[in-house]
Image 1 (cartoon, rainbow, N blue to C red):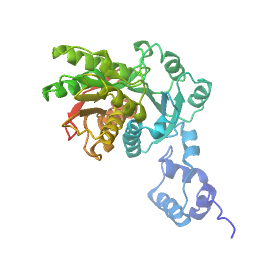
Image 2 (cartoon, rainbow, N blue to C red):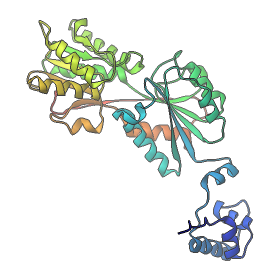
Image 3 (cartoon, one colour):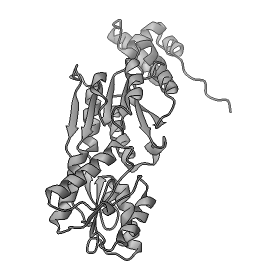
Length: 342
């Protein structure tokens, strides 16, 4: 069987007995008006021929591609696929863009990666804007941000702000406050030996959550025991190993605050394997609020990051009709979701 020949603009024009320019005017809503009768003929021809305009070509002619880039620099470029956290973020951004007729192009990068290919993408005319997910602070992100701003494409930062001199708007959330909230919750539940499973210290969020944990202990009048701080990455296996080390202490913790839900899930799994009851013997609190947190047993008490609000506000800043002309940073609050683990 021969492949079906693709219907072209010329085919539609011939069927409607008009010029290709008139077909283009009908499809794109201008720039010249068409009569109702001509418009009806063109639309009928499009339906009869099952014609689907080439969106990319139309975007080039209009200097719009309806494509937004999601650029993220991470320890592993594939984190945007495997991470529960990033998956939650991408889900809401994709939904917000779809409602506005836009697509999302994902461009994952690794810390220290050559920026030349990114620059080629930014200057290639394929993107109408960029969501730039930053997990580090200035000056570590300055070279990356400079490449993006030099391309003169609308850009909004997510998670961490860029240095003020770049003039980029950002949507962030309260890592320090969330970590302090988690720690105070455990104190309120009667715990005095509270461990912290920290994340990768190359990430600003890991450092901020460690700061929040320390601040809350100080505010509650509890001593800081550095032996209760374990971990150096976001791996569940590391969290599991850290749990065994913590439980081997002469005075083991009765509660654990993990810097991410994935770390908390790793801790829960190892506690279960060791026969420790949660929360009766060891309570656990996570951070992120990924959907999986409420599907495990016991369900995970966690600090919920407002993913839906991040997606909505970031998209409004990038594409909204009333987007601000000047740099704006929106810092969103987080909340404690109490469940069975603490």
